[in-house]
Length: 102
Image 1 (cartoon, one colour):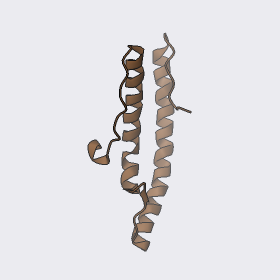
Image 2 (cartoon, one colour; image 1 turned 60 degrees about the vertical axis):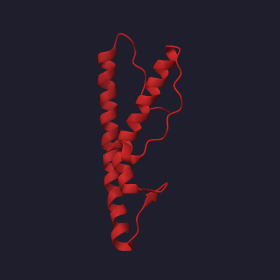
Image 3 (spheres, one colour; image 1 turned 180 degrees about the vertical axis):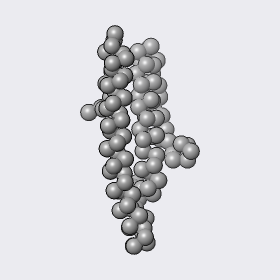
């Protein structure tokens, strides 16, 4: 399920405020979980001398970039839909690397 919805025409201000509240609540939940994960990732590094990874990426680094990457892909999906509405089709985009986001 996508956590964002299309706005209802004629009520964009209310929709935007609602979306902002939902987004803020989600960010708070993410930050709360992130704190616990960071503590445990640090423990693994400090006590065991190991690095936690996800698909070959340092997990602490991945977490710091997750929201940016998510917003990037949401923007690309919206662009794709806008182009399709106009009769144009966008080709598949190459995956972005963490270096591209810096």
